[in-house]
Length: 126
Image (tube, rainbow, N blue to C red; front, top):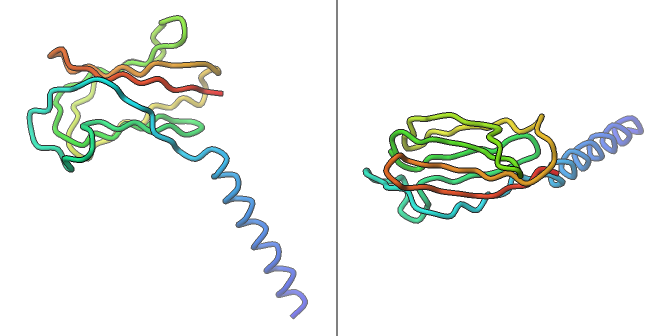
């Protein structure tokens, strides 16, 4: 019985520490401003066509509609491109941008559709 209590205490402490560590850097939304041309239906009319979330090591883009070809670019504080890609965004697809090796600072996320539509958001890395 004594060993059971000791093991239980260590297990509870481990769970508490893991929960506290993940609460320290929970994912949070990156506010995107602008407008993209959505040619097809989106998964949920209450959600925007693209959502962005940041955690300690990544920025995750979630595409909620069939948006076609999108250019994704991230700029650092002086305007230099630190990430650039083109994706074929379909409903339910995602893109993960690994920011784990980037320096601290403020970054700008730009999403453009080639038709004049864009979304822009700012996030920070500490």
